[in-house]
Length: 81
Image (cartoon, rainbow, N blue to C red; front, top):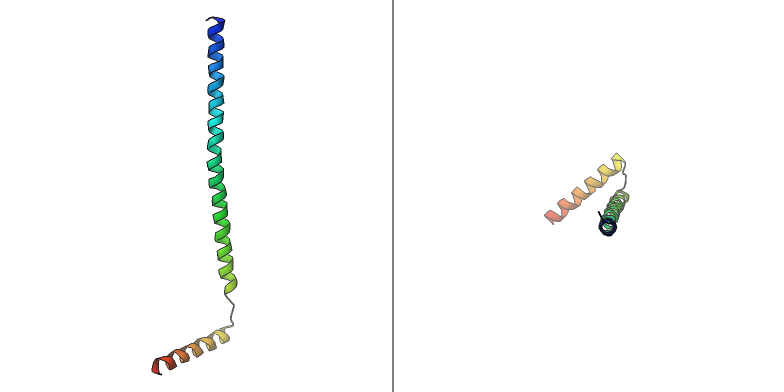
């Protein structure tokens, strides 16, 4: 193999390696964006769940029973009236 052929072969291999590295670099960006979007979705879901849990109030059994009886009486009154 002549020195010219060897240099041409070596430089073409370097350029292929450079192309591969560049392509991998380009592929990382969509995966990073997809990962960030996934994290944002998980955070948003957690915020929604936390908001719903805060909206619920803990009632004592007697208080809950009294509220349900009151609502039932109101519903019956609306139905008959």
